[in-house]
Image 1: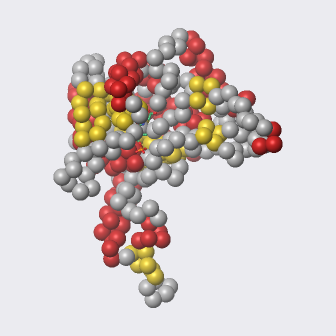
Image 2: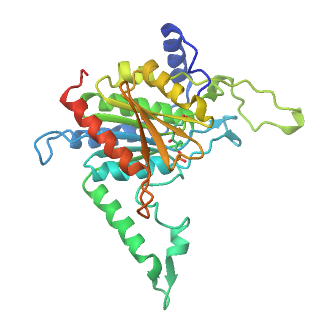
Image 3: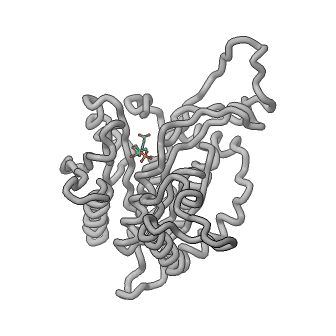
Length: 325
Ligand code: PAZ
């Protein structure tokens, strides 16, 4: 949800806010490692693949960002996102032949694990005659499928998983990924399904130690997270096909807000969804149409991401034919 969507922030103010966000954010602990992995993954996937053309690469963002309240963080603000949308979409993109950079919140839903129980290690295995353990008969198909699909994607070099926790990590990593993907041009895609915090405590005004309850009621000022979508489109990866998401709890304002985001951030598509029905239905908003996409209830295990990714892949293909449209 984005309370600033209706307000126009002048470009110079936005640029200054973005600069200040990145300058004051605590640097990534493993920045060099991420940069190396990105270079290798993008280098490999920009070589011509089987059909002679470069592989399409999508950055899928998934899960919610946290907002730390202390530098030595004990408490943080979080949100509801389970990462299911991002994980499911990643699987369908891989099936459609894309290489996926899965920028996800640590501990949220992972691709190829959706059909497993919540604690697969404890629930899927059983001890036979010690020291042997084996997969329970009832879970064996699901476990076999998860392991096979996951290992195939990794072995073919089609999946790079990069975890984040805080809003600081997320935005720095998104910027690194986008700048690395710029060279791919139109075959690059951003599928921004993460639930990104709208407000944060700037690092420079954050207290070092655990906030003390003895100090009385907590009075804390959160500032707006600068909107990075326009800079992603304009500067970081201008040729990439960009899809953002809009979540609302009030159906009445959802499509209007999605339309606004489409125009304001020059997205190619905005996927509008409502909190309670998000697993059943989404509306894909483009400049020319609004398409309702539903989960196919006649097939068990089918989810709304299946037809959604099919539609997106089609639109990406049309964009590749004519990126200026
Ligand atoms: O992660 P999840 O499957 O529980 O939910 C997906 C979602 C609702 C976070 C995603 O579809 C979405 O709308 N992301 C953007 C949220 C926003 O408007 O901030």
